Structure formats: structure tokens, C-alpha cells
Length: 134
Image 1 (spheres, helix red, strand yellow):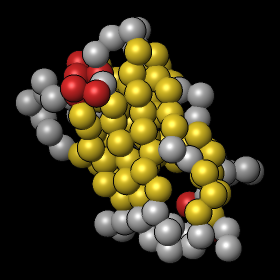
Image 2 (image 1 turned 120 degrees about the horizontal axis):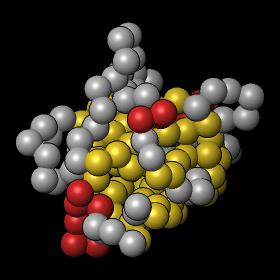
Image 3 (image 1 turned 135 degrees about the vertical axis):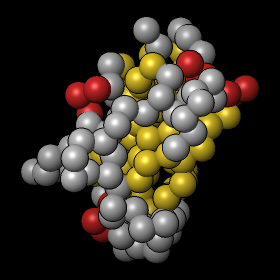
Image 4 (image 1 turned 30 degrees about the vertical axis):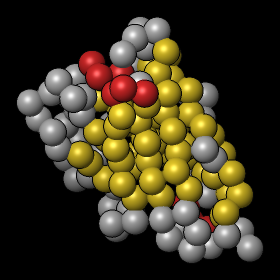
């Protein structure tokens, strides 16, 4: 089972950018799809993005509808890390961001949703806080 550690969160002004990292330990992330999720106080956890493993024949990436071309997920298997580049941040993006793993490929989203469901992911990081404020 791979262990995941998120980093890169912090305080950013509205309109600013952050790059979150999800580092793997105990196994190579190249065998795993990595999903990004977020949860704000008083709100349900929601899917942000998912990127399939480099060994998957299905290379689709998924983004939540709210992303609107502001975020980009990528992976660097040599560094055993997946990244989430977030641009044009607003106060609505403030949350704890988590990464999670699923073998090989991103699970199919449930009907009516844009990202795979959280319950399909098996290993989770501890989260990194993103605060958007002037």
C-alpha cells in the first residue's frame, strides 16, 4: 500500500496560484491513479481531479466542473510525485486538499459527476490547507 504525503498548501491572495504536491512512499506512484479531493468547513468532500497511472492505457484526466481550466494535474514518476497546479484562486477554493490512490486508472465518475467517487480510493494523505484571503 502506498503512503501519500501532500504539501504546498498555504495562504494565497485571490487570483494567486499554488502548486500542491502529492509524494508517494513505500511504492512507486507509477502504478497508481491519483485523485485530488478537497473539503471546506461545513461542506462535503468534493473531487477536484484525477490522473491515471503512466502504465494505464487510459490516459484520461478528470476535473471538477468548478475547475474551469484553472487547475492542471500532472505527474513526475521519477520524483514519485503528482502535482496539482492551481491558478486564479478564489475564496471558494479554500479547503483542505487531499490526494488519494487507486490502482492503475482513475475510476469512472458516477453518473452526473465529473470526477471519480472518493470511496473508490484506498490510500489517503493527511491533507494540506489552502487559504485564499487578501
